[in-house]
Amino acid sequence: MNLTPEMKAQLQEQKKQCVFCKLISGEMEAKKVFEDDLTISMVDIHPAIKGHITFMPKEHYPILPYLSQEEFKHLFGIIPQLCNAVKEAMVSTAVNVFIANGGAAGQQAGHFLMHIFPRENGDGFFNFFWKPKETLEEEKLKILQNNFPIMMGNHFKRNPMSWHSGTGEMVSYLQDVYANETILHEDEQVLVVMPKKGVVKGQMVVYSKIEEKLIENLSIDEAFHLFSTASLAATLVFEGLGVHGTNIILKSGSSDDNPDGKLSVHILPRMAEDGLNKSLLWEPKQPSYDLDSVKSRIKDKTWKIKYKEDKKVEAIVVEQKVIKIDSEEKKSNNAVDEIKEAIERINN
Ligand SMILES: [Zn+2]
Image (cartoon, rainbow, N blue to C red; front, side, top):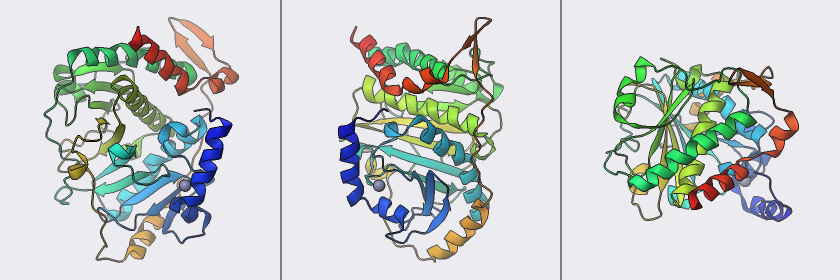
């Protein structure tokens, strides 16, 4: 998003009150497990589960759409390596990434951040164990079906991917999903669907089509595409369904709430009074174990994390023609134009 001078001034004010900005600047002591130029990760001092860490941009942004394209790519490009470090340190089989956009979705900090949890079967964490019961109205589903392909098309124009030319092939690994759920988008790397029933109305799921791959095996570009798709889906439900907030929750590897271990990202449209926060969020509690030892264990595994931008992609192939996209154009377009365009179509 291109921030106006007024928005920038407002952010400067917020920053002064922000606990996370104080932890980042060193004014308050943080249990850091990783940091680089743009991002930082620390142990959550009220962990929902042993090994629970937070990960955030160093710059103060209240919500995800405020991040620049570069920061977005950097942050989400590092996620696979950070998830790997947490899994190795805690010797776990699975991992979750949790994002709350907006108070209705349970966002508590004014500083955009995500939570990473190591998971395993029998760990007693049932917050993401959902009973699907809600179905979105047909006409609202149509809005999403009409607009999501437009947003994805714009995304590929802004971020040309050498591998992208269409829907790619169906994968047997997702056979049940193709058979039972409504498809909203498909390309070579992801399949986006709306389940017939969701935990809330309008739940969308982004499945990775990269067979047998867990989050920690994704490249920076693959992770960028997965999270870009999830973030666009969140923007679409926020604007298109007029909800109050969204959750983006990644599941990867086998845990009680993800028995087949598939890599998927769930987008939950949230209303202030939907009652889901009671089961979805965790109570802040004092751990019975030493957080510094958890910190050292994770920190021992993060030294090798490195963000390396893949520069090779500069052209997109559409109907046999190669269209060059200059970098100026890529920079000036942003998600806001895309949302406006989507809203206009919804209104018409
Ligand atoms: Zn902050």
